[in-house]
Length: 141
Image (cartoon, rainbow, N blue to C red; front, top):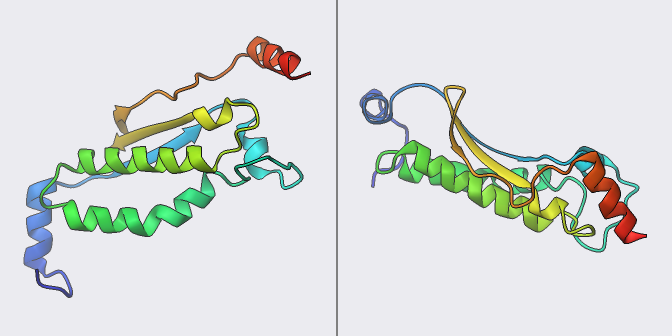
């Protein structure tokens, strides 16, 4: 495979094969207390860490960009980004504090194309209601 700059013909080939528009892989951790756990440096956890989304994003970004570059002409972009979203979710779950057994199961991978959802795997743990949080907190006491 030739290395170097993409030619105008190369870009036209990409546009012909994959089209134009935006596609995004994303992962959210949707629990009421997730943002506080992610941002607060005062919390001490048995395992996992703060910045459990940001850390895996920064660590994986080059790998995922390379995966897109390697596969864009041979694989449906939605499939490439689905794989990236799932890998990102796995990395987030591995980095998330497991103290309560809930947050580390709450990664929600999605792929959006031109703003519309084209892949959406629910998290392993649903977003807890206030009552469920109170019950979980009561069980820990």
